[in-house]
Amino acid sequence: MPPTTEYEQDFLAAGHRRIVGIDEAGRGCWAGPVVAAAVILAPETVAHPEQLAGVDDSKQLRSAARATGYQRVLEHAEAVGVGIVPAYMVDAFGILPATRLAMLTALLQLPCQPEALLIDAVTLPNLSLPQLALIKGDARSLTIAAASLVAKVTRDRLMEGADRAYPAYGFAAHKGYGTARHQHALQHHGPCPLHRRTFAPLLAWDM
Image (cartoon, rainbow, N blue to C red; front, side, top):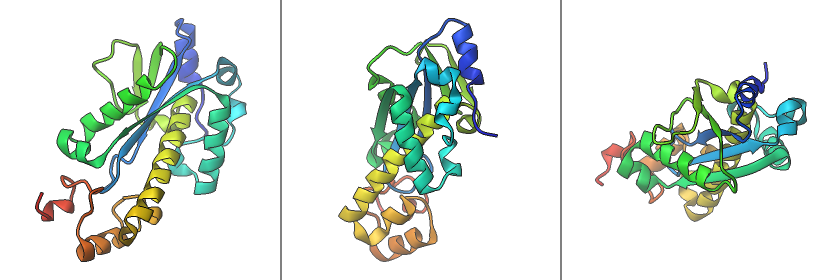
């Protein structure tokens, strides 16, 4: 079943108009940034979610479908913000605080004031805005699914650029996730500046 606008409609009924969906990409990676996106869908799209047919949890879509969905989100979104927290800050703060920082940064990039938040699994306790953390929210809320696509496509493109800077690691293929190829490259070349030194198996190398 595709994501719906049920939760968005609940917030609208409570008087909140600018409802932000927030999701991240790259939280479990060994290398690269954690990227978050904040998306506000136009009210017409919330009322007619079929406008975003095909937009779903980014993990359920192939690369071509993600790219198509990403463009569709940009066409139908009222506002989009992106937050990027690099690997060294993930190491400095820890992955959950870094994820929250990326989400807050994405909110700050929005050109308008949000009124309510729908977030995939995470809460932002320092914000007094009404918010709802949904487990598997990218599969349940269309606005969160839209944010998941923006975060995933943005991060994938960053890692494709990283592949050109550090071609030995295969970042364009695995995007920094823990694959056998990535493990093999680490064993032969050691970590590069994009690796998260506090993540296994990076702990084997000296900081």
